[in-house]
Image 1: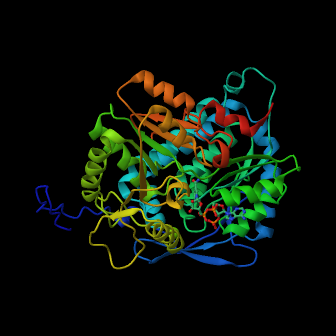
Image 2: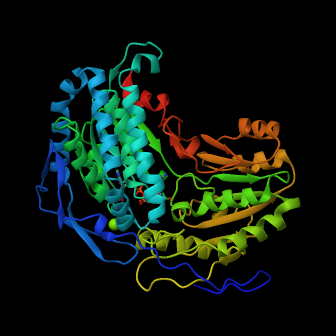
Length: 485
Ligand code: NAP
Ligand code: MG
């Protein structure tokens, strides 16, 4: 650990290592596609090794689905759909409830695998990803027999077969966000996990088997982008996608005019706004949580910090002090705050944009600390003196990098926050309730947090405006995209 010097009292002690046991999960050598209720090898034999981004070690081989496998999975889902729809809603709810219970029972194993495969700190997979995934299934289990109420008493039917594509930042949780509402409403699903993080979705497939999900109701087809593209073109009745805006646009172009339902949850460049009357220390914690949670690989990360000029010096000074206390390194250590970057490609994207920021003339401060020799790492970084139109202030970096700009008035804060192609989330820090509501009402963002950040609840709707996509996930609104009313 680095000895932090300067005006503060030097830190001369350190935590002992507190590694989570790898033995909590026994990985198999090989994982296959989950189609029609069984694990099957890909028809063209493609197998890809998934690795641990914190060590670059191979973890397991994973069968990748080609177009023929995707077609087979869609056929299996098509065949299973009428019976699943016809099942008494209470019985569908019980199946979802059992999935939630089994996620809880296997929580430790799931957390360890999520951290090994994706690089996020074990305390996050253990305390956030896995419990939130279970909570999602519990919540939608409860809706399964109350859909008349959720849909305002209207006549409705399921879409049919849905194709779902999820990214690598919250692999299990995003699978839960997608599958739970689809299943509750009588749809069957084909889900494609991300290339770098397929393992927890395949454990979820095992859980589906154990929970008594009828064969073909849930199908998991690991693969890269071309598998996703094949799923989009496979004739499913609805596509739900979470990922980059570029791929989202491509999917929208492909499906235009086909009548296929579509929801897109895309990128963001969310404003975290600190007013001068905010509780400053609390705001600093919120800024840290907003941008360094999951290494900043969060679509709604508070990556654009807007601070009122009168408190800017204090906020940035305290932020930098706090950043230097963050523990970066082994994701399996229970004390780690910031883990590994998910892949070499993502690390390269972050580095490239940070270089642009330096070239644009902003002042960069990155935490200096010892890092493991192998693996992909980027230490917490703040950019000061950022021009609002510069690329680092406009483009999604998707890493542990926050830009700071200042404002003078409430009107200016709102204008700056809304001056973005995106509109996924925002944070408002103030001790004045009326101001918080006034500002929130004028922000073009799907979620606005007041005096907190990155709070998620399965009963609350989540989704974007503008280039952050459309459609909502979570709560009763999250049921709507999966039904025809
Ligand atoms: P991405 O390419 O959009 O990946 C999201 C999912 O779509 C993955 O499962 C991906 O497969 C799949 N995919 C890729 N190309 C596809 C295509 N042509 N048709 C259908 N599916 C396709 O995102 P990424 O490359 O992982 O990350 C790039 C940037 O996207 C990040 O830097 C970040 O800015 C943004 N991003 C946003 C979110 C979010 O939650 N909003 C999440 C992840 C990334 P593969 O895994 O094999 O690529
Ligand atoms: Mg991996």
